[in-house]
Amino acid sequence: MRRLQVLCLTALMALGGCDGGEAKKAEATKATPATEAKPAEAATPAANAMPDAAELLAKVVEASGGAAKLDEIKSFYQEMQVEILGAGISGAGKTWSKGDDFYLEITLPGVGVSTGGGKAGKLWTLDPIQGLRELTGKEAAMAEMGTSLNIAHDWKRFFDKAETTKVEEVAGKKFAEVTLTASKSGNSVTLRIDLGDNRVVTQRLKQFSSMGEIPVEVTLSDYREQDGVWFAFEQVADMKLQKLKTTTTKLELNVPVDETKFAVPGSEPPADAKAPADAKTDAKK
Image 1 (cartoon, helix red, strand yellow):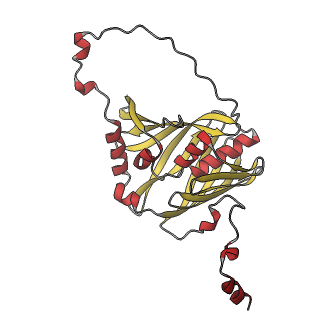
Image 2 (cartoon, rainbow, N blue to C red; image 1 turned 90 degrees about the vertical axis):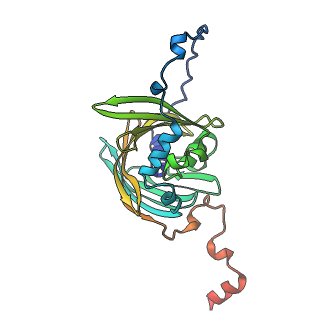
């Protein structure tokens, strides 16, 4: 449930609260001469190999309640508290979602009301600084990922490669990191998984907007069960210069939602304009 954070980050970047800047160019690495593998290296025990990424993600899904339970979720309504840590700014956010379509809004003092949504793959944002924008390219691809309630379950929808990149022990607890990569957009997300309970504890990614890109690390905590599925009710997005905390205060699954909110504002006629002529006549009587 990253959509609300995506909208918050976009609004903050527009205000200059965190400097997106231009995308930094990766430094070219020097090629090193290839060397033949030694017999001893070739005989490295399989036990030292990284655990399979797909298997790790499957364990995350199972710990979340299972694929069947996640597939049962067709719509949801969410309310959240939003806080810019250290800045004394707090507000509220709401999300309505059905399938891959959604609408969300946040209200922050000094920023105003910002909204965003998506219908049939057309994603957009509307804020007091930049106005109405349709998302394209990497920004749209990353925003689409935010439509997932559980990225470990849905990763094949957005990425074509999953690789275990690290396994380590910290303070007596074991963690693994799985990097998801989309070859078409070039986007990547790294999930850090607590191997004790198979829950995702952090996500590292780059947030894209019209003003540039910034590295973001999202810490997930306060996992709670809702209708047989576990969700992180607290998330803190560290953008280096700002930290954004979102806390879910209400979550309702499989509830009716107002689907007229999803489309780009002004792209569809009002609901009453779509009604048959005789229905309009009857309504006026």
